[in-house]
Each structure stands twice: as C-alpha cells, then as structure tokens.
Length: 339
Image 1 (cartoon, one colour):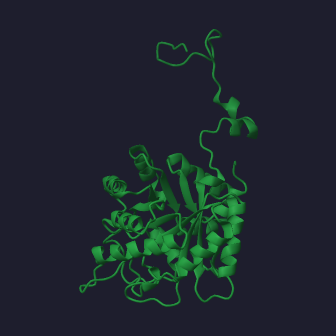
Image 2 (cartoon, helix red, strand yellow; image 1 turned 135 degrees about the horizontal axis):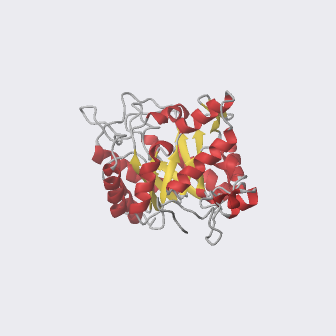
Image 3 (tube, one colour; image 1 turned 135 degrees about the vertical axis):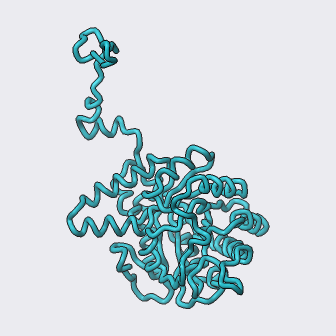
C-alpha cells in the first residue's frame, strides 16, 4: 500500500499498488459461504425438551408458541426428529404433577425427568448427547432451586446434597451429561464426588457457571409451571457484574466441570467472549425463553424476518465463542444449517 502526506491509502489511484476490494468475496451466496469466518452447524445446537407428567397429549406453551410440554410418546417423537435433523444434543426437563418443599421428585429414580431420560435414551441411543438438568425449582412448591432453611433462605449445603443425589439417578437413567443450574456454591464438586462414588466417572458435568438473575426467563417459568415466590437474586448473578463470571467459571472448572455455560446468551455476549478467552473447556450459551418469545412475537406481527433473525442470532452467539448453543429453534433450524 502507498499513502499520501495525510496517511490516506492511495491504492485506488496508484496502478502499481495492490488494490483489495472486500466486496469481491461477498458477491454470490457461494462466495459468502466460502469466505465465512463463523458457520453454525447442527452439531453446535442443543434442543430443550419438556416432559409433563399426567398429559395425554402434547400441550403448547402459550408464551412460547411452537414449544410443547410433551407426553412420553410425543417426547420420543420430538427427540427422534431432532436427532434426524442432526442436532448435537438434547437437554431434558421434567415437570411433575405434585411438588413439595424439598423437591423429592428430582431425586426419585422413577421421577419424571428420569423417565424422560430413559425414554429418550431408548429412542435415540448414543446418536445424540443426552443432558439432564439438575435443579429443584420444577419440583419444589416454593419454586426455589434448593431447599429452604428456617429463615426462608435457600440452604446452600443441604441443596447440593440433593443435587448430588439427582445427578446419580440421572446418570443411572442414561444421561451422558448432567447440568446443575441452581447456582449453589460447591455444586460441581459435590456432584463430581457423588458420580465418581457411584461408578459414573464417564458422565460429564456442564456447569451453569455464569447464570444471571435475568428477566428473560419468564416464559420458561410458564413451561415448567413454576411456583416461585420471591426471586432468585440471592444466588443468581447480578446482571451488571463481569469479573464475578470469571470467578464462578474458574471455581467450576477447578471443581471438575467439563463444560461451562453462560445464561442468557444474547444480552451477555460480552460474557461469552470473556469466558471463551479465559478457559480451556468448551463454552456453551443458553438462548433462553425470553429471547425466543420476543423473536416469535415480533415475527408474528410481521416486524422482522423470523428465519433470518434466528440465523443471525445463532451466528452471533457462536461468533462470541460459544461452541454449544442451547436454543428452542435447534431442531427446526438444524435442517437448514451447514453440515
């Protein structure tokens, strides 16, 4: 390149200088694919699925159009369809008919999530990664992610003992990865100890390591019929904090997390990038229910091009550094992505 006295590139007027036109590689769809720096593939996507105890037919979640609480039969069909479309993983959530103060359904070997795991493993085998969510909020009548002490606060140490039990029954049911999402201190270490003691050394842990106290979770609480009283700000992260995420992630990795996660995704892409630059394990991001519902609502109004916005959002999460993206669009859009 040559420059004038003001430091400006004179390549356009100097025939002896190289002249680069970036638009050359944008001219056709084939050229754009050829030069793409970030390409999301089906294997990067994880589909959430919900099994609701007591249903006789699938029930659409009103605040999440196109997402369903499933029966056992429809869950198996949805899992098989997602795997046929090429998704990399399935993360399962159970919704029991009855809840209690200690969330006993989460640790029951025959609890609804363990039923879901066994059914899906029987349906798809090891052709996709099967993930069980470890939390008590779907199972407690107060809706918190752990058991409460005499003062009504979440009891950290009592809760992680139940998480450990839940991890073992999920592994027994066939989960290849367990994903503790309760944001209790020491949860990964306690789960790792319990899994190893039970002979499940090969079961991996996906830590919900940087999970923020976000208002993007609203529709999910409809999906799992949450009975939450109060909020979760006492244990989920404050949205304005950055360094705290590095601390949480470093603790989880030291305790044995095989993968770490940022949740939500789109409003926290800076956190995804920060963590991806600082850890050596894979980084996942959860494109949460509020993100999904906002796009679907705007698309229903005709305000945005739904398909293009979904693809753009997935690319942004991957570009920020997430190698796994949990998204309610996984099965649908896996069919249209580069394989």
